[in-house]
Amino acid sequence: MSNFHVALKKVVDDSYDIETGYHLEETLLEDLKHHLAGEIKKFVVVTDDIVEKLYAQKIVSMLKEAGYTCDCIVIPAGEEFKTRKQKEYIEDTMLEKGYRRDCCMIAVGGGVVTDIVGFTAGTFARGIPFINYATTLLAAADASIGGKTAVDTQLATNLIGLFHQPQKVYIDIATWETLPKRQLISGLSETIKHACMRDKTFFTYLEEHMEDIFAIDHEVCSHIAAENCRVKYEVVMKDEKESSYREILNLGHTVGRAIETVSGYRLLHGEALGIGMVAQVRLGYYYGYLTKEEMLRVIALIQKAGLPTDIPDYIEKEALVKKLYTDKKVKDGKLRFVFQKGIGDIMEFENETYAKPVPEEDIRKIIYEM
Image (cartoon, rainbow, N blue to C red; front, side, top):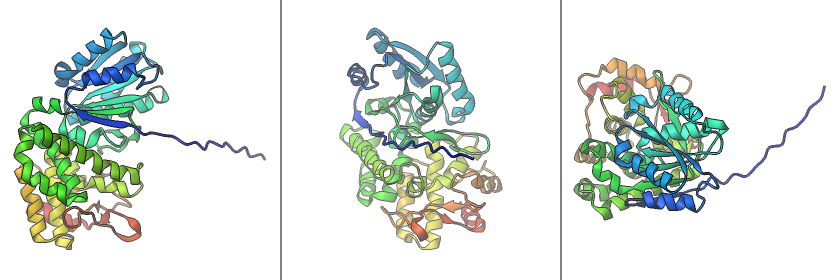
């Protein structure tokens, strides 16, 4: 008998910058010229069929004019297309066009695109670099920061994926001006979630500046983009791989993700999360984690943002209760919820855990009341 020890200890620096501004295409190109992706000269831009004409084509043209090899791969827009099938399509297209380990991927789009590109980059040729160019408020607030990448399946959302950090993230607020209002509203849900769990002052700021956000006021939008980055960074720095504390970013998502799926994606992610946040504060009020006044204040802000707060009639509520069990926080067959503590803080439970087991009958009661 013999034993051979493989020593693989290493220190990895996955740090990266998040640049917020307006019309950042030229900035991206200059960064690449200054070796953001090292000596790589081959780029694959992945986008969706809406963003392609708005922004991706311009970036592809700029890269080609600068002498880089570049191809654009387009997937359908929508959460229902964040699938293994689309990831496979991207991979096969890259292989057919001759891309190998000496390339870098650039995600130009919202959360679906940034998620699927990050996952693909993490597995293609056992890992290649990627860059996020976020074109939605939702991606700016959530999907493009933190390195969590995944696809959805019929049985669960975001359970097939990995952690893979980008080279850099660009948050181009100018792109928000072309967002349909429904998409802008949807993006506000993650912003409200961040304020609810980490910053009461930011919550008040959102109450006072909602109309300015809809008007794409440069100062206000730059501020909320910066606050979103700050909040998410503070959480990810404490727990990059979601072993415990990072679970707080799932505030409102237990019901929200289930509603999104059961709706057949008729609801956008942010719309479903708005309803999930209402379920969370109602259940939290029931458990005594926030006052009635605080609960109503959260619901009022969600409504002020134009997000839904009631479960649509077309959703079968028992199917929704059953779908809750596909949530990634479920352990030993038990539903687990993250709860806010008042406004601007989060509940911490025994042994430094941040998700509490919840009896099915308690959340069923809340769902049927909504």
